Picture 1 (spheres, rainbow, N blue to C red):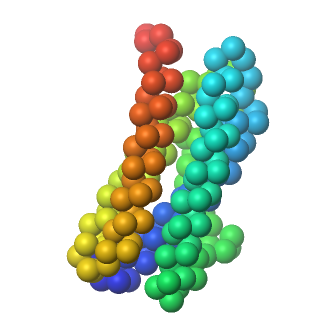
Picture 2 (cartoon, rainbow, N blue to C red):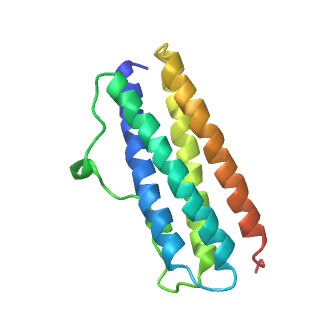
Length: 151
């Protein structure tokens, strides 16, 4: 893989992180009900971490003489993480977070592989750092999911 592959993946991840910030923030605001408080608190805390991921990715793009994209390059893709019509449907938000985290893990694994192939150890380090955070998010939300009864 080439440096272009690395910067394409960095750009994709940057946009995804910013979309995640928007969706986590919105869901942290709108969820209601008995089961919502812990999930809302986790989402609110994760907003800062996801924003930091975007900063890391944007700074790495800048170091590679590229610019992180602006809002005109944004195309929403996290349909499963949209705020639910029923604001007590906490489980659908948990499912959306799990899907978003799986997508993020796939992106960061691809970025790690591309960076290794391009002999770019700095981007490798960025990918590993963020990958560890995303794995922790997934683990936390898997725990939330276990609290809901199965049909």
